Image (cartoon, rainbow, N blue to C red; front, side):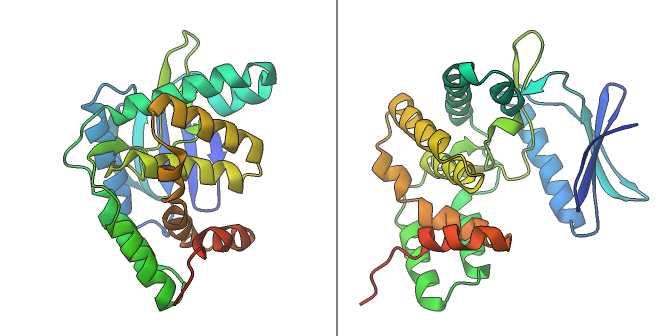
Length: 246
């Protein structure tokens, strides 16, 4: 098997026409099975995605086995062809909007997940209270949300066919939350110009006011804070602490 990605808590291998994603002990069996279940549910939609083949226990940890998709990620293509950034970004947003048209009624609910993340965050009770209230006031939708929709999770085949990978964070809910999450990740990666360009394009194509997306920023920033990455704390705090307390 050829190692494609090696991180502190997971490894991704290519084994012929299969992709093997191996998780270490920091991932519970439930988390791994939930990711596999998400993928199985997304397979029932019209989104191009790898086919789930198997879930098994290996000496290294639990593994998800899918078909291998040949191609380059949109992130790679943007780096290789910076002059085509606008073209790739438009393709990226169009694909995200297509995902929102899908329905997968058995996916977890976004609000339930975010309420749990707020409760488990390290913010003080007053901040958590306001975040819970803000979240509860958001409109309930049932759109399919990827949850980590970034260019590295979109593979373009040699024939130009887009595939969306890594459905670990998929839920159903409000599209504006997914857009806020994408904007936040661009910002955390130091791609502020790309983040602004993405948000403007998304707002235009989705016909969603930017103000509605901004309303989600403290919530998705709180969600991200639960990953406890020290170098992200200052920026996330600036997004979360936007309330005037009486």
